[in-house]
Amino acid sequence: MTILDLLDADALEASLRDHLARREMPDLFLYLGTEGAGHWLDLDESESFDVASDLTALLRTSAPLVASEVPAGVGVVGLGVGGGRKERILLEALPANGSRRYVAADVSRALVEAALDAVVDLPLEALGATARVEDLPRLRPHVRPPVLVCLLGNTFSNFEPDRLLKRVRAALGPSDRFLFDAHLAPADEENEASWRQDVERAYASAENARFNLGPLTARGLPTDAARFALRLVRVPTRQGPTWRTRKKIHVLRDADVSFTAGVVRLRAGEVIRMGFTYKHTRRQVFGWVREAGFTVIEVFSDADKTNLLVLARP
Image (cartoon, rainbow, N blue to C red; front, side, top):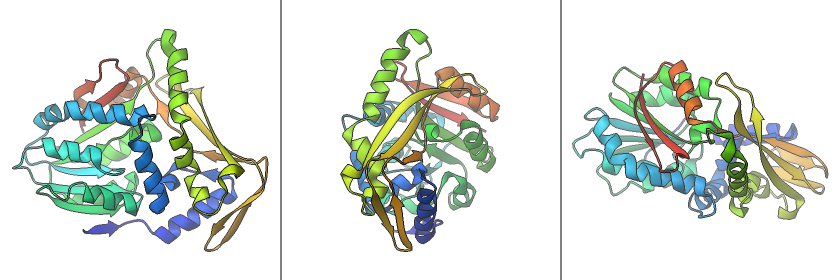
């Protein structure tokens, strides 16, 4: 098992401490360490969190068609691979005479190891990397062109779409392809109320709360000292108003979070700001894709149009 460490674990730990001292916790920290990886894998496989399971089902049915639309001999770079289940589905669908080169990248070394373990029985030349999406230019040379860059598991929705798409496009060559998925908001206002309730219910699951509180509980915060809260809010974008999650951790009583370099003391009544997940409409996704200069090759969606899988070229 070969893993390229582009991220410094000690630097990430120090960054988490600095962010928490400002009462903020970006989502990348949720995946770190054995605990973070375990919480994510539990959530990704949970029946109560159907956002993940529905996207996996869409990829499973679409993978043969995706494979038929990519160039011969394509290699795969997976960004934010998690446990690597989705990437394995895709790799199994690609022709056996392809390049068989696969790079599995994630911010969590434990998840990278899980992703490599998930394909150990496939005839691949696999490389792991602790890396962020911003590190794609450093990963790209490890696979001969053409390359299929994958951002699966609704990861697309955890970024500002214009910056993300422009960053990915800048790293791709003319023969490369980009595959990403997204959980969508409804296009019509009539169904918004029930859809919003369903989304907030899924994200309020015990598994998701445990995942979001994980970096704190792993460092000594008692589970009854804080409460995770999420709601959907309407926000303006260049593609029109859209939905975005607003996540917070409410501190219920004084407690310490312990780091090697010292302790961050939390006080009752404080609020820790967290990351977000967008819920774009189908039209908005295509608007962002066109704005970034991509050309859509193929689009896949499930029967009720709540999930989208897009294959595009620069």
